[in-house]
Image 1: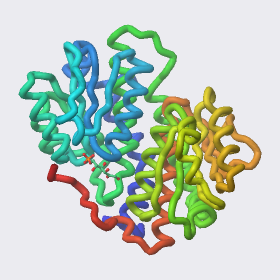
Image 2 (image 1 turned 60 degrees about the vertical axis):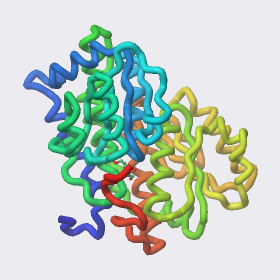
Image 3 (image 1 turned 30 degrees about the vertical axis):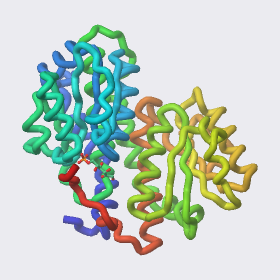
Image 4 (image 1 turned 90 degrees about the vertical axis):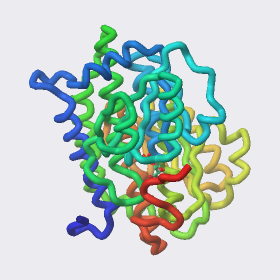
Length: 357
Ligand code: F6R
């Protein structure tokens, strides 16, 4: 039920801090240590490479998951779009572990790959919001997202839940491997949940950003570097699917290799700046597009902000920044769609679960 909310999407955006807190509860034991299916831990230990398979928003969560698993657990990860994988299979490592990320657990493209990798004899883990779903039943192991039913077609809380569970999985693997870490995932996820909540309380600011930057535009660019690049891919997908504004996410450094040709007077360019080591270079990109007439909308993280930034996000651990920085992108998309009288919860041509290949 939507309750007092005008749309499921807005309700689900607002639920995100609570979902993260629920995940913390579900994945920790009485000593505040990570509690994870020991078989999943073993599978992560036994593999020499993780292959993440997913579609759409879940694929975008997988791109962030790769950062977590490689940076924290030092296990190499490849992320593949399910529909491409079957006919364009990469050379597999000797001991692959296949990780399927799917909110619904019913996505036919992902299932087709699972059927194939099972036949090949490879172990599989599904990360899903629906434990009894097809992908969950057919894979060896399941991790539950605990996000509660997601009704709006545009995925929001499942995405942030996927990233949180992937972070926990990465830290658990690192601990199992005896990697010494200064990163306390439950504490940092708690801080991220608080930051998400603070952002959900600033809807008026988000509505204003949507009104200032996206009122009549036909297109919009999103740029980011490093981990921010993967978040802007998701930001662009959210905007296009619910507001029908043509949106594209780019790595900041790629702009000059073609896309900058599309910048015209007034083109909105949303830039994310949450990663210290690339703050200078993304700022350089913002200057480049502004010099060509673009209307830059800069969302930076506290500690990295500069004069003229459009909005400053609360500070969280850099690795977990995507959980926080995606919230304004979701809200800006929501308000942009609302202003255009779009059917926010049921965008045209889209279905909640895509059960055909
Ligand atoms: C976008 C969206 C889709 C899904 C994709 C995969 O907002 O919802 O891109 O993420 O269809 O669906 P699941 O996660 O159910 O496999």
